[in-house]
Image 1 (cartoon, rainbow, N blue to C red):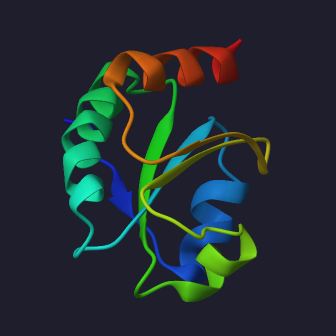
Image 2: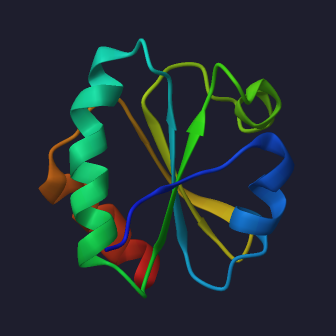
Length: 108
């Protein structure tokens, strides 16, 4: 069962920037209500796109360096990386259908 992996500042380069697959990064924090709303959708997508897209979560409270490096000012923010570069960004809660469109575009 595919689940998003928690990634730290120290692991970000290896897990995201050097990944062979496109990577959806969920920037979140435990106190963030909309983050808790988007989490189950991200988990569903992780299962649907297993083997096609890698899913990781970055807790912005614990991993400030990565959040600052990518200009994360509000959460949840979802960034899609392809070949080590961000190719798409979604800020705030969005329905699953919209997130799927973003992923499909990144895969094409």
